[in-house]
Amino acid sequence: MRHADAVNPTDRDGVFEVVQQSVFQLWEVVNNLTRIQPPKQERYCVTIFGSARMTPETPLYEGVRHLASELTAMGCDIVTGGGPGLMQAANEGSVKADPEDRTKLIGIRVSLNFEQETNPFVEQVYLHRTFFSRLHHFVLLSNAFVVVPGGIGTALEALTVWQLLQVPKLYDTPLILVGSMWSDFAAWARHYMVDVEPPMADPADMSIPHCVADCEAAIARLRDAHAQWLRCQV
Image (cartoon, rainbow, N blue to C red; front, side):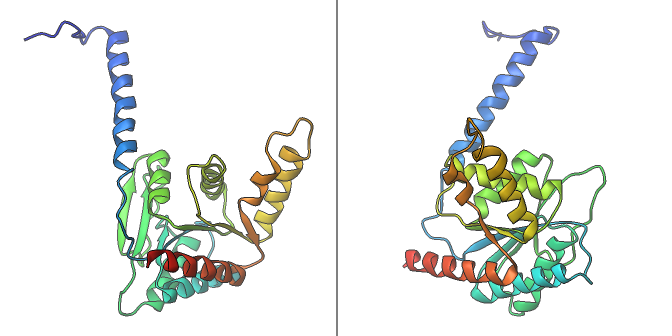
């Protein structure tokens, strides 16, 4: 039986319109499904973003490993991109702090032409074909974000979360930027977006991320955020 609005496969414009409408409708389905949230979350979940290129002998690698160890000792789940570098440092620190395997260690990967291997410390891996769906997955899982030094991919992750908090599509979610790289970036953003005429962002937007000097300062902020979250779970 043929529908009155059937599209002939040879009609390129008609086929394109059907595909485009279907993609938009699929996004609506995903948006509706993500409205369903568990009534109570088992553990506080912290995502750590950072460079894939940092090697284990660097002080920053050790700092991120310590950061994840302390968060795991608090009872937090750890989420990373699942790759090498500072992602591996976070996963490694979490594993060593949790010999009884009480918390989750999640890696959210993306398919790349220059494929990186999943680091050996990840316990649960999700693989995405697009950065769009991968970033959405990070947002769905996380109660807090820590951004340590990194490259363009790390900047994309940090700015995505920053904007979602600005709009706001995220609420009560700490975004902590670690190190002078990010404090300098925040100063650049204020100079070129706020301290201009006309301004291109509000002064309040600049207070969304918390810039801290090092991983120890990030741990202190997250300890407070975790304690507040625990009080809300009662």
